Length: 372
Image (cartoon, rainbow, N blue to C red):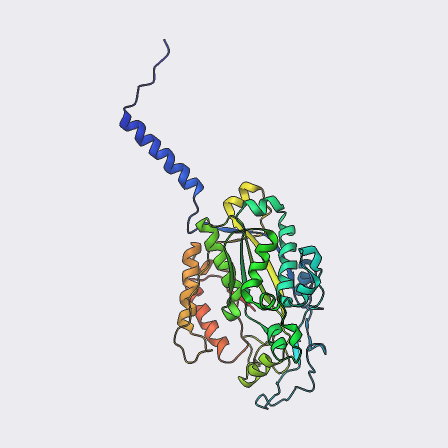
């Protein structure tokens, strides 16, 4: 005779059903510690209009800094070696893209008239986001189905400032307000792609693009989107911010940021755009995506009160590194390389170096390599 399976009581059947549902939920639902995969990226940077050329610049240690192009401002006319000279700046240098006025508006369904009112940062974001999605191999149907989120780090509004200082009132047409709004810099990407996931433009100064990545990871883990674009963009069009930084003695006189060096005398302004395409690691693996890198943890905090508004706080830096390590589930001694903020200033560099030592130095058997 065939053995018979004992009949379970209704209570046991209900318990088994609950266990099965819990297992399915655990497999399907995101968690706060899910690793996030980078599955695509694209860039426009000084020294590289795409990934391959930018990598070549890095690999050969090429110098991408140049004298300010004459179509931005007259570098000699506005230069003075005295950083406190009124209406002048203490540097002639910067990192500039080959051009920021080239754009094919019809490709994105935009009229040439509207494109003329768009901040070049918006144009760059559209181009580089499209290239990053192509690099990731995502189809248009996948992009729409994945509740794609868009997170953009953007701090500047120099295109708008040029218009405000212009004598040409005709520049303020029906497209100007949306063309220069930082909120629209992210929103226009979602509009062009036709996606309805979360959409944020983020300004946290130097950390804006990293905070965009952090927020993208949070939204991916929460399930609010299954695919995310995280970006950063900056275009240098006006001399006035550089003048202000010169008055604060922040600008390197030779246009070279000499981080962690006794010669450090400031940084150099530059422009560019970078976009990464992100998915939870488990989703990327399930979809057969190419995985370029994995983000295991990140964290955000603020300096709070320090010795000054623009002065760093070592204790806060050490704390946020510890929070990121905890989120990633790794020990500080396991970190082999750090890409530092690297202000290139006598004030900021030692504070950052000591914070790295405090957060990552305990129990190390190998040196920690730091770059910037």
